[in-house]
Image (cartoon, rainbow, N blue to C red; front, top):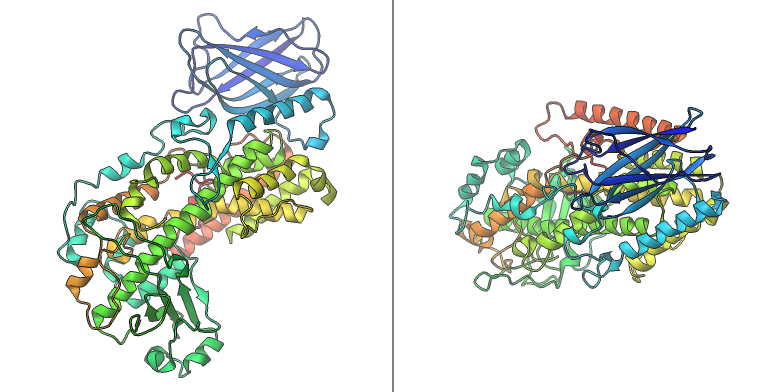
Length: 617
């Protein structure tokens, strides 16, 4: 009587094991096995981290094994089980792997295909076509779109983390809890500051090399300019080719700051002048979470100069979008505190832009759109599903947690905030994978599932906004490579660059105020130390701020970094492409480490060994 050896791997995360009954059915091209209980006498099956083997005996050979059906039935009480994979050894000695990587909840059954990726046009038999369609039908019922806020990308239809499908929840409630992470700071400060030295009390308990350097040098112009290139929001600075009419800086105003004996116009032509404009913030009303404490917001414009030492220095700041006597242009030659307060207002605006646009919108919310569309339109057997899965791991979970605790009404950000080379390598790896499965541009065009994924992102996830530049289809391999590279880069390197430096650059609160308690100055000569202290966040909001940036800067438990994948890739060409990619990333990590050695301000956030695969915090 032929026998098939079935090896079952249980996950190693908390509560992954089960005491429930597990049944298996092998589906072959010739026939199916009997529904078989996987159980060993006097043995505790399916413990956390276990790999267990069982014999499934059949009357006749089943042919090629194409599907494996797993069923979980209650033993005493429902006991969730996380299955990593199942391997089937055939009577002829061949091994077939069936990746699972999902939870079986309640009396649930899962039907798995082997680990090889297949495009929809490659499936020829009705059996696998029906399995493919049934999986997508169930997913579309489970992963539903919902509008979180008008004008924002769509999100998952779940109000709380515990309402999410079990497969995309954190492994345990310890995953991320913003309340627990930031509340530890709340007891520190509950009243107003007296002077700048008061902020140093925070550093008695938590120390960090970069944040300490920021604390010591935050008032200096070089530190102000440095952050536009190397801080946690390095996306605002642009080369200035022409001064906007709303920002009437003259050569006479800034000539003392120019070092090359050129006029301002000549420096602009030489490419040495840069500009940062927070116009998008203009007209936004400040939150009113505390009737006793008014909060204010400005939309400044800042002119920057690359000096002969190649340092970026500020040379002019206007705190509003409309020029005039009520909106003076502040200069380094003004009084010490006038200039310092103007820079603080720019840093506060930068904090707002970073948190709500650079970080929240352009990494978290956009990646969630890709994730939901992927679950709705791509079955687990699709090669793009296998490619993207590691890069959306826990993204929907962290965003749901954030909407529940962090950016909800009266959440943390409502309290502290006023308004709501790696890329090249990613392209190389994605290109390798795409060319393995898509033999021509026509193959891309004929893939109905990938076209549905692309369309779902634009038409539903982005709600077909007029300004949406997402395509509704892709017509070539190169277009698909570019699209998928954007997804991978956004979820990994882009998020790492703008997220994990938050404590470094924002924990010294005068360097990145999350709120301002006095309006921006409308004339020069008024600022002094007291005015600045009264403008900065009070002790209570400072503690909320510190707890938030600390929590957001922490890596998650079991974080997967450096191109390592949690998906089960079984095909040799894909494994080879992944190994080549990992070696390239390791070389870059070593190069960055060498360049950082001895630097007072090392930069590690784009080092591949520090880049998690997905947006998970």
